[in-house]
Amino acid sequence: MSVQALVEEKDSMNLALDRPGTKVGFATRAVPVKEMVSLEDAVRAPEVGDLVMAEVLRIRRHSKLETQDGRTMNIFPGDRVLGAFGHRYAPDQYEGYVPNEPVEECDLLSVGGVVGEVASRHDSMAAPTRLRVLGTVCDGDGRPLNTRSFGLPSVLRSATEGGRDSAAEVILVIGSSMNAGKTTSVGTMARALSRAGFEVAAAKVTGTAAGKDGRFFESCGARPVVDFTAAGYPSTYLLGREELLNLYHSILSRLHASNPDYIIVEIADGVFQRETRMMIESEAVLSTVDHLVFAAPDSLSMESGVRFARERNLPLRATTGAITQSDLAIREAEEATGVPCLNTQSMLNGELVRLLDASREKNPEDVPEESPAAGFVEKAHDAVADAVTGTVEGVPANAPASAVGRGA
Image 1 (spheres, one colour):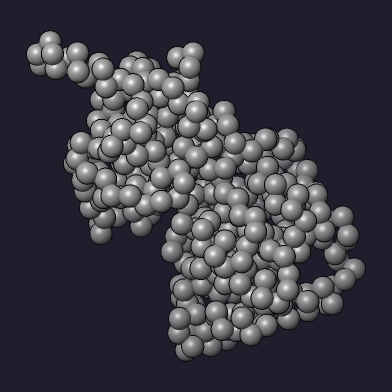
Image 2 (cartoon, one colour):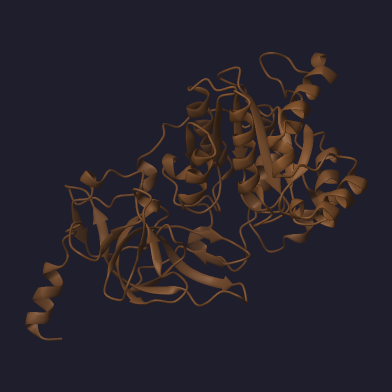
């Protein structure tokens, strides 16, 4: 490289966020743009949440980037992407991790601008879009910026302390897997309840940064809508237990502050996923939950999920999900589980409201005013624990050493 080229490359080590071809990813949304002042050489191993400027080298899986303000923009070779390092758990897409040493190149793990290194991918997935690291994004004093230094204030509660901050009833939506229909179901429930005259808030508390789910919840009538990126997390994969629970309570407190009638909470992925399992085995979470809805794509998954909920005395009210695209599959699931399986039309026709009302009338003595779902105890999922070998707190054996104990 010539001296002139070196000078020009060094000159590019400024953010120039208004420069054509520069896109700021949704994963960075907790960090005010005014804090992004300078670009420094990446001389240390990145950490989860570190902001990074990178140049697009090759377009593969992701040809678009969702920006801080929620727009989806095309990206091209030579464009600059400002993203955040994070892990990713997506069985239908990528397994990815933050590198454990400084790197010159990395992968675009999500449309929201989460970057890292792909460890495995679904057979149907193309190779990831490849990026060249230009530098670490810093503040005016030259200190590296990290999303976890911004966002919602932490709500510190013990591992067993739950409680609630308003009279809102919390509906928890979990499912059998990724793409089981959880997000669509949350939106449909928000539509049904808001059309019935209730104030509804919604949240997605785990996953990988992307704004489309939150916008979908809003379009369905939920106000406000909060997700983990608002708390400063580009993703939640490999978070420690206490950090995960504090994240949950921070989001829940923000929603309770709006004093809605209902808060609908989605936990991403399936019940066997590490963070999902941590949350639904935590009394601190379950003590805040009034109703549970389980989503699945088929009757076998549904029967297993219902059995999972019943074994743990969870407040299961209904099932739903991708299975409801077929009336025949709905009947099959209801016969197998004895639990109502709600599709979009039945929810909008009032069946969801009737089931929620019936649950109060059936067990009023079991619903103390201060903690409607109190009394659920934690139960370890032994079958899953036995199946996860070579792990530390559920950290996969193929994860880099940097992933252990550093959160997501």
